[in-house]
Image (spheres, rainbow, N blue to C red):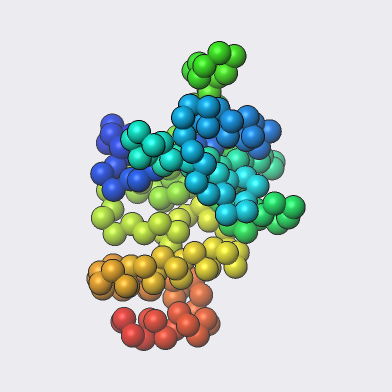
Length: 193
């Protein structure tokens, strides 16, 4: 969404396309995506997330269901049979608009006001490209959960092990502010800063 809306093209480093849908349509959309020649690759036991790969193009399609609560829409991951979110993102309530045919008797909707989603994810400066933006660590829409903390630490370790120490310093600075009393993060910060 960011690349298409801001730059008019898919971002060069993007490896997937993310789709969201109301939970009531999740299983139907999984079937449609499979019927279009895509193979489901992983769901990791989440009941509102599925990932697919297109054999011809290699493109990965991630599908995530959302729920509305009051004035907000929530997406993220929750395990099958568990009502608690493992990872949850909060957005201004999604409003869908234009309907586009997706095969016989099947329609897909596009979201109104995508800038609300982009601001929730990337902050108020989302129109300005940020080469140091780090998934999960800099996600403005994420709510604090143990799974979110785990994902931020994994992302930090991934950056650090890649050898990009400048980006790792940025990442550990952000993570340390979020979790100032975590001993593992403190050790990482002392090592990098």
